[in-house]
Image (spheres, rainbow, N blue to C red):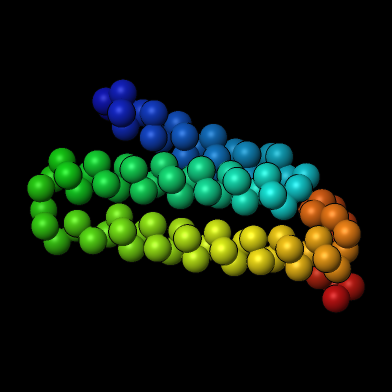
Length: 98
């Protein structure tokens, strides 16, 4: 495994571990998800450049578009949660109380 592949794999795993183990605030979970998407975008871009296949060149841009949609939906949920509950702590959110 090359150092480039190792660094992107490590970045993705650290983001995944941040989502799994450090779940106190919704904003920190969203930042970890964005870090995971950024590492996936860069890895997919480098992979499509290394293979030289023209069929996979739009894939990183589509991933980036979906990542932007995910970020906007996450920020909208963050604002709605902060307005209704007064905080973004994940421990205060309960789906059964809605």
